[in-house]
Structures are given as C-alpha cells and as structure tokens.
Image (cartoon, rainbow, N blue to C red; front, side, top):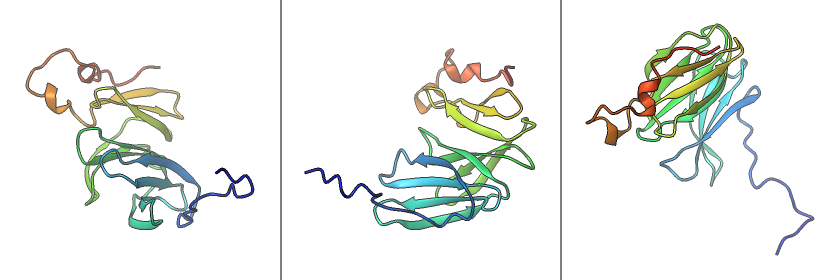
Length: 159
C-alpha cells in the first residue's frame, strides 16, 4: 500500500561539508555508493546505503566533480576542478592513487565510459571533450588487438 502522507526520504546522509557534486553506484558491491564533495569538502565518501554508515572518506585535495566506476576492475575514477582540473584513477578499496590524467584547463564537470568500459570521455568547463584510456581494454579484448572502441581513445581532444 502506498501512503501518500509519508513521502520523505528513506535515508539522509549529511556528512559532506560542501555541495555534493558527484554520485556513482558501485557495479560490483550492492548497496555501495560513492559521493564526491565540492571545494570546501574535497572528499570521496563511500557509503553503505542500507545502514547509512560512511565506510571510508578520502581527501582528494580538490573539489570532486564526477565519479565513475570501472566495469571490469575494482577501480574508480574521479574528476576534479581547481587547481589541477584532472582525472584520478584510484584502486578500490585501498584508495591508492594509480594515475593522474591532465590536460583540461578548467573544471572537469562530467565523465562517461564507452560501452566496452575501456575509454573514458570527460567534459569540462574549458569547452572540450577529451578521451582517455583510463581503465584499459576489457579482459576479453586484451588478447586480440581488434578495432574496439578502446583503440579510438588515442584522440586527445574534440572541440
């Protein structure tokens, strides 16, 4: 039965200290959500959405604008604003920094990945889309070097 008198949220998570700018559900762990905070927060937080508990919080050093989980590895990519305007690839759950991807000259507002999961495209306030080989080729394509979308990512910028 639907009760229209009780339409409030099931859960409210209030631990960020600035605007929450990024959200990404984990594809390999049910109920795990990553969120990213703005300039005064600068953290990526990992939440158990069943209990509301913060599982981890990592200070990235700059505002977190978007988050994207790998489809094939236990990795997450974050995009950032001032001062580096970069993408950062992290190993999950240790949150060890694997690599930084630099090239944008303004805040990286959004990311998405190719259907095969290897290529990441970023959209930024510098009016560009940039294509990055962030997650690498999917496991089934690493043996053969066919013309998959991942090979298209050699193109650094479209304006």
